[in-house]
Length: 326
Image (cartoon, rainbow, N blue to C red; front, side, top):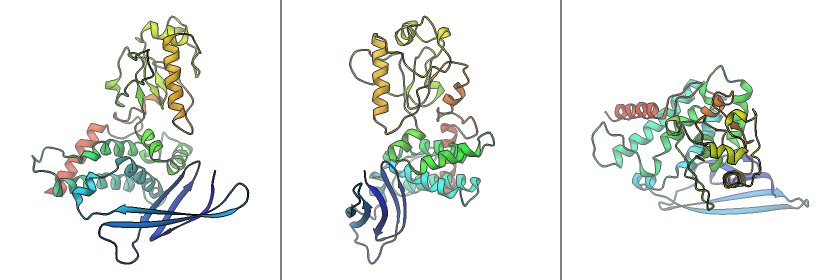
């Protein structure tokens, strides 16, 4: 593993970097000289020391296509990378600005971006219709979820340690980890196919999408087992007749020779292998203390410590867009 010592970006005036198992760099560009109208070439030099003590210099060259057309910009927008960048800038800003100001900036940025698209790129339509770029359909839900994270929600019920821990974690996250933080994967188990290796399609992160008889979800977060969970699923996973016999704080799935057990353990193992680190497995029953922890990951609903639901946030942003365009 490389141990970066310093980094220098040619053509850039500001460099922010974080060192972890993966190397992440965010830059703010300042062009030196007259820019090429169709392409931008950047060069990054990395000076590091190997495990054997050798000093080495690695040079990376990157050629990026440029365009002055807004339609082309929105067409090729990468939402996951964009929300990773905005998450880090927002978490850095809370050290210097009031939390209320940072939250207002996030909303204003969202409204201005979407208003710009509607004014310059979208086809004429009724003012009551919300128009989103095809590549940014999920951008508002990510934005709303970001504003409900511990560091940005501003609740007195959350400790300073919790907010500081999440801030440090987000500042070191890559694109995929940020995506999973802001929109966890919820995988239903009650209707999964026991044959084959296919993982069930994830559900939307809303309580309305959870089935009363479902045994899910299993994924990146604690998963609840409803009272109405099918008895054969409980028997196959825990070798118990009902949830009433399940010990509190169970965090290990028994290795049983049943189709349900083999399938669920394979799903959990597959999810954990996709990430360099993962959370402890937690199984939550209805009305358990941990149910509150689970519900805060249903990011399309209203936040437990403040924050609008996804639909309320979307309506508010739509009003802001209409105000900007009038």
